[in-house]
Length: 110
Image 1 (cartoon, one colour):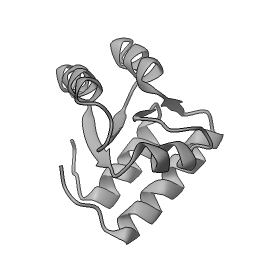
Image 2: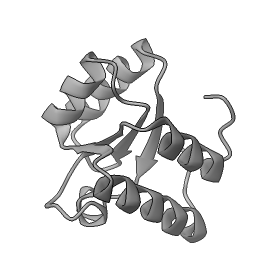
Image 3: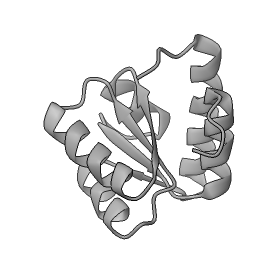
């Protein structure tokens, strides 16, 4: 997955934080997996240091449902963004937030 600039990280962190406050984020491997299975996730964010098993299973579910996946450097940072402890995965439930984040990453219609 692509390296992220500091400017991209700052913008995406902002969108994720606002989405969390709006109740449009699921955080943690099990919650994200459940939301993916129910086809509620619009964008998946995976920490680079999440376990290979978690990254593989969640990526596979996302791919099966046509969901874009972006990487984030660490679980600590992902948790901090949403005001929680370490999180290996975040699921964005709102299409507007998902599209805004994809735009920052330069992903069109993904």
